[in-house]
Structures are given as structure tokens and as C-alpha cells.
Length: 308
Ligand code: HSE
Image 1 (tube, rainbow, N blue to C red):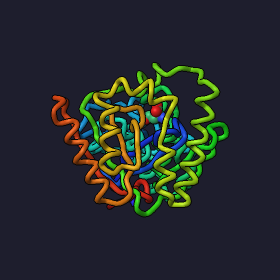
Image 2 (cartoon, rainbow, N blue to C red; image 1 turned 90 degrees about the horizontal axis):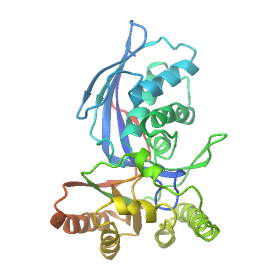
Image 3 (cartoon, helix red, strand yellow; image 1 turned 90 degrees about the vertical axis):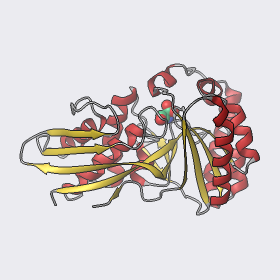
């Protein structure tokens, strides 16, 4: 096989209480990528459609992630061409760089005959995240590659666990069309946390994981609380608090900032609630004079898919 097309899903990182450790994958939006083997040695990004991103493979997250894979494969000069169709806006908070990195490594792994497991691919895709934000976090690339909800138990050594995705869980995301760079959104965080906040946060993380496995939607709802990162970052997002309150009134279980923002996500039980939440997001944002997009999606349990 010399050429394939992949779908690489958008992701919600952090999932409220799980800063840098929990993430989930969505069915939409997502990017598409065509990957080809080439006789000419080295990686080439032949085109990026839908976004202004570098074609230099050393400056493009897909190029960097594939280079990390080829290095480990011990054939760093393998010829690979990558064409990217971006549907996830860079700087949106729904895992744009992660989708490119994840799609690229899953695609190239497929072209090479699957020398690596999906879990092993996460480490290569994290190099794309390092380039994009200065931090090799895995809470977007892990769900993008593995699908569903994932948890990073440890970064050193890397230990990633796939969590259970309750069948009726839906996600609604609003993407205000303003850019928040992940590197900036990380810069403003405090480097130390209060013990009282830490206790509340790890209580929520444990309970969220239990809620997912038990399909206990009430427990999921109670656990979607972030007392450490959200209070700092929410100032970057127009009408954040109003949005959260109104979405819960409209039937959401809860939610928070998607990744480093500016997108905001809400989880709901069932499609009807998720669509009510989308309507409410629209109502809250329509008068603000900020352009926005809204997505309603089920949890994508497959991760990156080979589509052609
Ligand atoms: N966990 C990362 C952060 C995700 O919040 O900075 C970035 O999308």
C-alpha cells in the first residue's frame, strides 16, 4: 500500500478536572490527511488546505511527529508525502495540532505495515505537541489516536489508560473564533497549587473516572469541576460563566474549557440534551458580536480512522 487517507478527530483535553491527564475524542470536527510513500528520501508536506501552516516538515507538527516515528523505526530517510485538509482551526482548543500529529503517525504506521501499536504511536505524536505549544502533553494526542476517553497516569514513564465511554454520552462544543495560543494559556497558570484545591481536584478526577466506568451520569456531572486551571483561564473566554450556567439549565451534565480554550465543551446524556445545549450556546453567544461555531458529537471510540 503506497497511499492512504485518514480521518483525525478533534479532541477535548483536560475534561474539566483532568488538566494534562484526561481527554476525549469526538466524531466531528476532524481533519483529513493523505499520506503517500515516495521514492525520494525524507518527509514532504505537499499542501495544507484550510489553514496557514508551515510546509517545512521541521516546523509542521505532522512532519515532526512522523520524523520521531521514522527515527525509532531506524529508517529516518524513508520517503513520505503528507497532504493535510484542516477542518479543525489552529488555536481553537479542540486539538488541531494533535489531530495533525495523530493522523500523520497512524497513517505512516499503516503505510509501513503497522510496526508500532497505537499506544506506542502516542509518544511520537507528543513531539508534534511539543513543537506546537512547547509542552509535550498527551491529553489530546492520546484520545485522538486511541479513541474514547483516555487518562495519562504518568508522563515519566509514559503510562496511558483507555477509560470507558458511556454509550449515551454526547459532547457539545462552542468555538468562539478568537485565538488562544496554548503556550500563552499555559504561561498564565500558577506553578503552585493550594493543598485544599489539590484535594478537591483529585477527588473530582477519581470520581469522574468512576462515573465513566459505572455509566453514572449524576456522578459524572458532579465531578466536572476544575478549581485549579479554569479560574485562571476562564478570563480569556467571552461570557464563560454565563455560558456554563445556562448550558446546565438546558440539560448539560457539566463542562468547562476545552483544552486551553477558547472553545468550551459540555457533556450531556443523550443527543436531545446535547442539541438543547447547542441551542443555548447559540442564544448566549448570538448577541456578543463574536463569530463562533458549534459542534454536537458522540464520543468517538475509534480514534484516527483509515478511510481510503
Ligand atoms: N492540557 C493542555 C492544556 C491541552 O490545557 O494546556 C492543550 O490543548
